[in-house]
Amino acid sequence: MASLLKTFLIVMLVGLPFAGMAQPLKFPERPIRLIIPFAAGGGTDIVARIVVQRLVETMGQPVIVEAKPGGGGAIAVAELMRAAPDGHVLLIATSSNAVLPVVAGLSWHPSNDFTPIAIVYSYPFVLATNSDNSQRFPDLAQFITRVRSEPDKVTWGSSGIGGPQHLVGEHFNKVAGLKMVHVPYKGNAPMIQALRSNEVQVVFDTQTLMLPHIHEGRLKPLAITSAKRSSRLPDTPTLSEAGYPELAVEITNYVLAPKGTPVAIQRELNRQFAAALEHPEVRDRLQGFGHTVPLAADNSPEAVKAHIDRFSATYGPLAREVGGANR
Image (tube, rainbow, N blue to C red; front, side, top):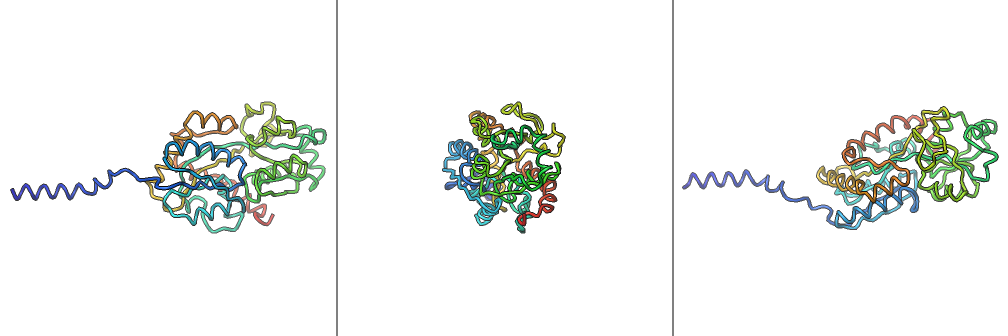
């Protein structure tokens, strides 16, 4: 009897850790804040709200989208870094976040100081001008010829210093040998408004925000940065076709959590975001904007880190070259 009791106690004690591990993950326990680094109403905000509608249904907690624009994303990142590493505060960052430390003189590392969660979508930029400039800039080739003949006369707008529009615009200037005057704005909406009013002559921005103005006849597309022509703008040439294959670039938006977020929560968040993006309504709406949406099988935290490191390697030197926040 004593021997049987001893054996029973040993089995019970050995089983305790496994009983604890088998308990279901209690997450989320309260509303989740999803921070975006750009002004409300921009492309990132629109997509975030579409995805959030699905997340709320599956996570059982509100997911609140908060716009924290400014500093090329630095304000939003600082908000994330102040948060507890428990998965209840997240950030949708964009590719340019990978070079933000260079642009703004910050000390954090773009992939090592955060917890990667999931990719949300990727997209090309459209280079567009005001339709009033149609005679002056009838197509991409004549636009480039005109700008080369008038250095520092043509203005181009971006959504802010260090933002993706700024980086791609600087890349375009470099490889095409152009000298345009950069005018940064606080977000996509004021940048587009400046283009509509011809305050600036050209901008790079997403199809999501450009298409309504193009269809209205207020903006004229000159080129797109995708590797092949967009089905939404089939008559618009790619910059690769114009002889600039270096500019076949798509920007990627991805989700980050604070450094130190437990692996179990990281994996649960990845599962939730990947599943939301697989939902037909969500996927159809995002693809309708011209975005590329990753398949769940390819959408891992490791894929996020790999993208950040690649973008940093490509655009980090350019950010240093153009002077970052000094430009």
